[in-house]
Structures are given as C-alpha cells and as structure tokens.
Length: 347
Image (cartoon, rainbow, N blue to C red; front, side, top):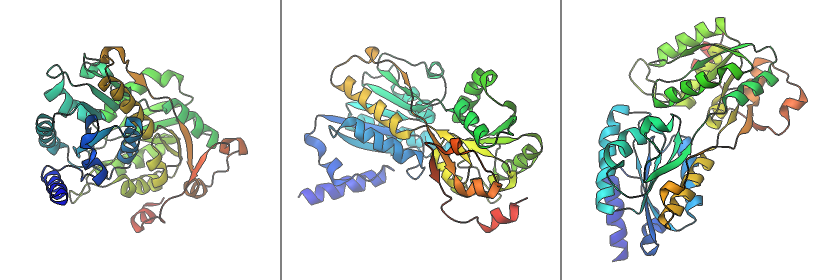
C-alpha cells in the first residue's frame, strides 16, 4: 500500500511539472512543517542546486519540501502558467511556509498570488532588485537579498591584470539585469576601474556582436547572466555553451560574480554563495514557523564572497599575476577543451 501511495505521489508531481520528490521527503508527513519552494529557474541551472542544498541545511530536517521550477531562464513567457500551477499546489497542500527564490518568483508568484492575500510566512532569497520594487518587507514576508560582489570582483581582476583601467558589462535583459544595473549605478564611483558601457543583448548574435565592439573600447568585460539567450535557430543556449564563445571572441580579461561562469571560461571573480542564500532564507522561515513574527525577522544581505580563478583562461590570455593574487583563491579549470565554434571565434 505504501509503495502505491509513493508511486501516485510521484506521478502527481510530474503532472504538475514539479521536482520528483525523494522517498525521505515523501515520508516526512509526520514532521511538523511543510515548505513550498518556488524556484525562478530550471532544475539544471547551476545556481539552483546550491540554493536547494542551503535550504535543506537551514531547515535542519524539520520539514517536508516540495519544489516548483518556473523555468524562466529558458522560457520566460511560460513562467506565468507555472506560477499558477505553484499557486494551485499552495492551495491544495497548504504549506506552513514558502521560500521564493530569485526575482522572477517574486514577480510571477509571490506578488500576484500571496502578498497581502495570505498569512503564511514567506521568505525570499536571491533577490537582486531593491526590496521596495516588490513592496517588501510585508507583514508575512522577509528574506535575504543577493548583492553581487562587483567592487571586489573588479579589484581582484585588477590584481590579476594591473593594466585594467576600464570595463564593460554584458548581461541578459531581465530582472536580474535590472538589479545589476541598479547596484552599479549606486557603486560605480567607488570602482577601481571606469565603467564605459552596459549592454543587454537580446540573443546570441547580438551578444557576440557586442563583445566584438567591447573588445575595442574596454580593458575588461564583466559577464552577468546570459543563460537562455537564443541562437539563430531559436534554441536557448546554456552559459556553459555561450561563455566560451564570448570569452574567446573578447580575448581580454573577463570577470563575473557566479562560480559556474568562471568554471565555464570566465577568467575570475569574487562570487556569491547560493548555499548562503538558501540557508539563511530557510533559517528565517524556520524561525517564523516556530512562532517568531515575520515583522521581527529583518531583511538581510549576503556577506560571503570567495575569489575564484580559471587557470585555463589565465594561461590562454598569457597573464602572469603576482603570487599575492593567488593566495586564498579557488582555482578552476574549464570542464572541456574549447569547442570548434569557440576555436573558430578566437581572434
């Protein structure tokens, strides 16, 4: 009988587009809390497993977790329908708490369906935009903002290559990009290099064309999120596919604030932790589910940052940083050799 119940639960999850639950999660009914996690992006996006690991650590095995993926990196237009599915699950399952991850989950799910409509405690994480954009905090909403370590990243890149005097930013248009731009406008006077241009490519072709122009006008390129940009056939590319093309065409130092992008071929960065984001949000939610009023749980800001450096890209660019620039740095390598397309694009 138990096997049949588990099988039916798994089937229902697939029908709703939910993550298949593990046996331990399905058998958690005797545990005190039920937590609905709404992810803005697809399960395979490298940031998402970090968030989930942090959430599970923060909840300390106290809760049954169900997850909905809005998949807005690859299919933004379809995010609204998936958010409606998440709301139907919320109504039928009646969770004790909700964790909404990244900006699109706020805009598509929390705002339309939950904010000022329910009393369930809700914690956000991975939010780049100002909380005021979503009218946070609210009576039942708090969380942790994601501030990119841009100043530290630019400073570290300048350690790797002291010739850097100017930089450009390339990032996909969207709420994450808007948050990046908002932060840059507030901080740029304090950056150790001068921002010359920010570009928001609409597809792969415009991204590649922009990089060719930026090569002539900047010393360094900061690459933000570019996942889901579509090629000429309409296929959305992953960052693992696109970043080697961008870095090879640019042919100069690149930087970012996400570890997976450095692994994909960006030179370096001071990266934020998805683990920190998920764990802090989960701990805040646990406080609320145990009785602490959400109004007494303040919105916080990420603190942890780690220097990472792609040695393959360092050698490709022929850079020889001082030994001091390598102290306390996590060294990464490209997972595979350059693709034929990236080799062909090399200047």
